[in-house]
Length: 371
Image (cartoon, rainbow, N blue to C red):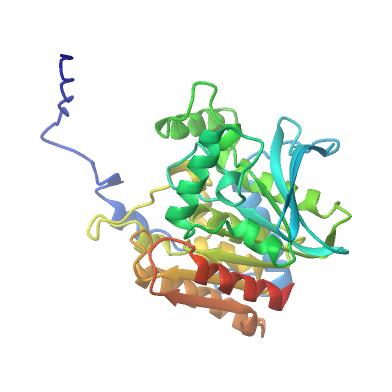
């Protein structure tokens, strides 16, 4: 009989400065966040000039970007006919350093078609990435089984990318750095993400920013495809994918409409020892120094006056509803200031942190209206 492993006893000291993964003085730090570059706070009163200045500050905080590839050099490596569309597994150069695999779904019929960059979630589950959005093929059975389990858990068993393709959209999905086929040689270990992100910062780069830059480059790639109407490209995602969707919408002029399910809040509500709330994604959405200038809804407001859909759930333990409503109010003030409030859809559903079939149907209706 094997001896049971003894649990490591935590060493504790009488005095401490951090609790619940936050500094004890978190409330003081939050009071010092004045967001001087937010629309309405900024001395720049011309909206076009403000967008240019604020976007430049976001990009500056994202540190040195990955160099662009000389060309995407896309190759189809596998293909599968599905109900109303064709699934392709492709290779492409997403930047000057990384040649990746991705999935591309092409509807039956004559294009060009509207298109969606489908951005996968975090979930603390790094073994799969793009396979969370598009039903995988040309992979090990273990990957298929894992993806099916994840789709059942977060997407009510329906792959959102396949759902959109059946309804006439070209759909692209790729792994973010550290997910799926862009992971560690040594294997999946969630605890290593933050260490690797720290090492990237030592190199003057930001891992979260690389994810956003790759989303920007992927959208530029989509615009080169003959099957895609480059004037009708949108994006969508749930959880970290929702964060990626509003970041991409804010920073890419090629995105014409974006849908974000279950990721929006204000920092003051998100970070609280009293309410036992904090950021769970770690470095996955950490842009150094950016909070000194802009909060999440201020950055998302860089997408104004584009059509945007934000949905959060009353049963979502990650994003307290008071913080969600506060963020929605900030964004509505921005869209209203540009006489574009009809383009901003903010909705609170009685759902947990998820993107089930009804929510996917709502996303489709939004995309059909605006793309």
